[in-house]
Image (cartoon, rainbow, N blue to C red):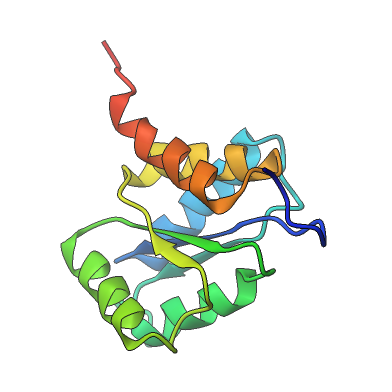
Length: 139
């Protein structure tokens, strides 16, 4: 497994209630992945008017912007962000094909997802690596 035949990488969308948090986690994950310039990562934080919350429109636009045909992994920070992504997935035409909501811790999962995607791993491997971040211990 790996990149699809077109050499495309899995895209990553980071959904937060805060635009600044989403952008900062995207920046951190990309930096910790050695720059991972080839991996398309997009933050989708806050509302259209710059407030705190989530926006289906911003999430859909971010997913479309990172879709290269190899799948899109979406990580969300809190409950209503998860619900917004689930609602978009239920519509079946709001997000690119092969978009998955990944059950993972937001920061550690984002780093694991971007690092794994940068190796050319497929969507299942990116999802597994992000989810595995729940096992990272700090003590």
